[in-house]
Image (cartoon, rainbow, N blue to C red):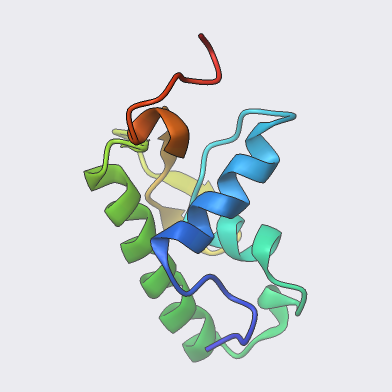
Length: 103
């Protein structure tokens, strides 16, 4: 696994919140890894990419279960194949009961 890849759902949320301050994106495992990793993710061997993508997708699904992300109904075509896409719908602060950034 990549040393600097997100290891928890909180790590993934940190990446998403940082980028979402300036623009809205559809979040996929590949996008999270590209934004989070200092090492070149696309240069890894295919098997290592698959493991990292699978793990990061599980972390995105954890955030979906917490109501922070919303799964898109159509898979997203990316450099890494057809990935599940998610939209960022709530900040962690709102999730914890505070105000949202849109309030």
